[in-house]
Each structure stands twice: as structure tokens, then as C-alpha cells.
Length: 548
Image 1: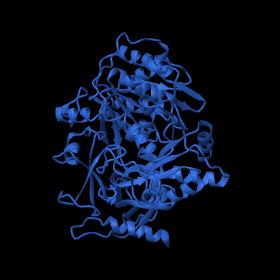
Image 2: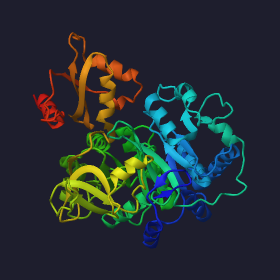
Image 3: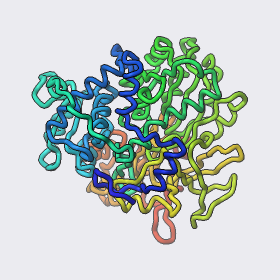
Image 4: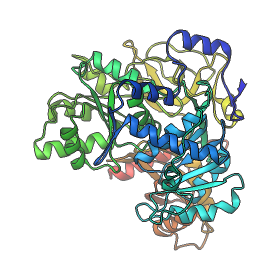
């Protein structure tokens, strides 16, 4: 373990640095280094597209320098944490670049989060400067920040983005100062670059720590692999990205164009019909997204008879991917190969799918070929299992995170050899593919968003009408899974219903993704001999209810 300049403990030592530097997996450069090198070679290269905005690397760098200089002038220095809670806007790219220039740590926060989640993340990460929309899609983020500020003494700068008033301290005002960095600080590529929050089984989000070295090459390696299995080689890689830039997938798509010959086309909000137009207009060659994106894209393409000839790769993951959906992509689209991939915020893109000739069956029935990672399947006692045997998926590799913000969570998640226990159950096939079969962690995968069952249970237990609650995954046609709440009502509370539960959960100030979509009131739960709730039986029960 090593203490980072940010103060966090990270799983880093000289042997690890030498290992991944010698292999070429860790380039020893920051995102800003890559961007400056690209600007020197091709300053007018269009790297990012946001609607009508076509952004060149030189434009983004110039704006990032002005923002970095303004932040530096306000006393921010290496190791300080800056958050952004933004949609897929160009300002997110600039903020990401500017923080990298100064050696700051960026903390992306998903826009759907509300007071409770945002307050925890800002406090836990020790955020000193926060970027947020003044308002977006009917929600007043500025008002939320005003509510939270008194409880966040470390938060010094509140920076609204796209605010109408152009007030002092806004994003536009900082950039508009026109400052320049007198000298760009030397930033250690092994320092923490990002803390990304993911749901924890305890109900408290966990901060995933990535360095400059563990990030930029994730998608570049993926494109190299996919090119070998398709016709994508030899043309500019154009990536359609509808996933939020505050997720690891969107973050990777945001950084990819600075590190490779590619361009990322962003969607602020997913729409299958708009995606069809973007793919054709921008000659998109690849996309990475959650299951609903692929399902709805194929539905819209089939309905309109559009074959999307430029699209060659669609990597699908996050939520369960039905095998038939992969086969349908081969039928509906002219030359697109869709496949399942597996990973998480901690270990992004552990697998890279199957897109070669004759590999459709593997693409549909496995979660992808292991690439750039070592994978072990372990039993409950930590013993390795052989091919085909089911156990916990444990992973080690160069793109792996270097620990959580909470050192106790880090210690509980790694073994002595540095393998990370994912909490997912699965097996490895003879072809070197992972097949995910279940989860050890009590998380619900709602369309790629992980929701802690315990977090929602804790909210329900505060509701006076509820004596005990258990939240489980419920099958959902579009999202894969959503939330079902089983509750035991207190005697005499006949008014307990889904509407009253939803009102109580909403009042707690959490994101809508955590709202139960079904309520089942029972007299008692199925339990083990020790009294533990048998959630496997509850999951089976809700499946049977839905089928009936």
C-alpha cells in the first residue's frame, strides 16, 4: 500500500509499476499529455461531437487551460478533489482535461442522484470544487447545492454550468477570465486521477480509485481487439456513446479520442430514433451500451428498414443480455456484430466479447473472451476451480482500480496475490470466456445501474407502517431487473400500499432508480434456521407472480 498525494491509500508498489510499465500497459502519461501530443500532430482533429458542436482537440485544450488556470488561481493543487454532476455535455470533457493538467482528482457524480447520495459523495471524497447544471430536466441542482453547502465545510467552490445569469463563479465566468497556465505542473501518472462511486452492499456507496495509468487505454485496447475480428480496421473509429460520462463506460468514451485515432459522438439522452440518424450521419462504426440501448436500436431499425451499414460493433453489457438479442443484431443490421462484454467500475472491460467469423454462438451465450486480465474462479474457501466449475469471479490486471477510498473495503476485496473479488458468480469456458451465472453481492442490476438492496431496505425500515422489509431483484422486460419490496406491515396499517411507499422513498431524497416498482405485503418471510431471510425464495416468488 502507498499513500497517494490525495491522501488515499492505494494498492501500488514499485514491483507493480515496473511490471505494467515494462509490458506497455501503463503508458506513464496523463490524459493531458495525450491531448497535447495529439494537438501538436493534428490541431484541427475533431475528437468529440455533441449535437451540433464539433469539438477539435485544440479548442478543448485551450478552454481546459483557461479553466485550469482559474482553478489554480483559487488555490486548488495536486490531490484536491473536483466533482462534476453533468449530463453528456462538452464542459465535462473540458473539466476532465483541466483537472488532469493540475493533478487534481475528478469525482464524477451521476446526474440522477439527489440530496442524500450527492451529500454523501461530496463529503466522503472531500470535494473542494463542484460543477453542476444550474437546472436540468426539471430539477434545480443549484438549489440542491445551496441546501447541502452548510454541511460541507470542505466545499469551497460552487460552480454552476450553463447558468442563464452568467454570475461570477460560474463555469463561463471562470473560463472567461482568459487566464493561462504559467507552467503546467508535472503530474505523476501513478497518482489517483478519479474516484468513481458505485453502489455498495452495505448501503454506502464505495469510491473506486483509478490512476492516470489505469484509465486511458481501456477502450483503445478494445478497439484493437475488435478490429482484428471485423472490417473496422483501416477506417477512423467513430464511437456512439449514450452512456453517461459519469459512468466508467462514458468516462472511457470521453477520454478515448485523445489516446487513439477515434472520435466519440455523444447523445445527451438516449433515443433509438435519434441514434439511427446519428449513426448514419456520423458513419458510426462502434457503440458500447447497456442492453436496453441495443434492444431499442434494433427495434427502431427493423421498424424503419434501416440497415446501418457503417456500424460494425456493438458491445453490450451492464444488464443481462438475452442470447436472442445478439442473433437479432446479425439479422437486422447489415454488418454489425453484437456481443456481450463483462466488467465493472473496478475492473472495466474484463472481457471483450466475440466478433470474429463463426463466433456468433459464443457472442450470444458467453459474457466474452477474457482480455488483458487474469481471471480465477474461486470456491467459498478461496480455492481455485477448473474450467466449467461455478464460483466467484476474481480478477487482476492493468486496468484494475487500485482500491477504494475506504481502506477497510479495499482489504476485504483483495486476496494476498492482488486478485479482486468481484462478487459475481460464474465460470470460465475452454474458449477462455466468462459466463456470469449470478451474484454473491446483494445488488440489483437495473438497466446497468447497480442498486444496493440494503440501502432501499434501510429507507423502508424508517417508514412507521413497516415492521420489516426485504428488497429483491424482479425481472423487467426492458431493464433486465428492477426492484420489488417485500414487507411485513405493522398491525393495523391497512393503508400500506405501493403509492404510500413510493411517497416515503421519494421524501428520503434518493434517485428514482431506487424506487420499488412492486410491493408485496406478507405475514412473514421465508427464513433460514438462523433467521436470515431467504431472498432466493423471494426472487423465485416474484418470478412466479409475474408469470401468473
